[in-house]
Length: 265
Image (cartoon, rainbow, N blue to C red):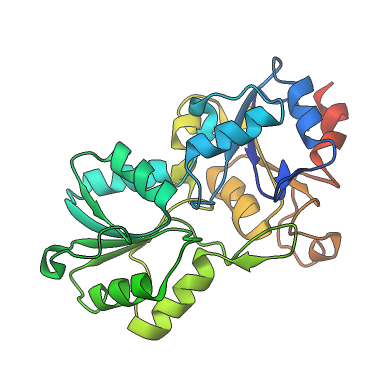
């Protein structure tokens, strides 16, 4: 693989797992911070981009907010393009605060605003809500009974990796909503939709970009959809036994990101 000027790194399962940095990953980023442009991309919308900045800085990575990519970016662009003014977000407090900050001209309702006029709602936004309650499920499911209410999801991941094992994520929630309402989202943001990479694709030639991640269903597919190289790390979800059945192999397969020094030299 030729040397790259732009690395897009997944976080969960690639740079860290739960609260623990992954062997060699953080050291690799710190060693090459001045050599290439590192950007970090996570579908996990249970945290705000600022949360990721703080976590990476605590690991010794001098990241700034402009290096964090999130499904929030294409989501907020879509809300503006569609002219939505009133939305209900199934999300935790951090996501709600971030969405309200980014969309000051949109009224964002959530679990902290139990009283609102249902007839005025224009969309339901489903994020990775780690503070999910039955009240939120019920309210949003009833809103989705109305076909004119748009259904938007931040990402399709079925599970979120953790030190204890995989946890239900937005993709699992979507199965619940489909059973209860008969609806699938009108739009799903985040990986593998290449719109999440739009700022970088406008700045770098595709031949100079590489995606690094641990998931075949999102990270690998994103790289393919965007037309860039993909490095699969086996430090998270994917296993080497998954490779023989793939129609298209990753550009490179490594046990963890710290083993990538040779191709950069």
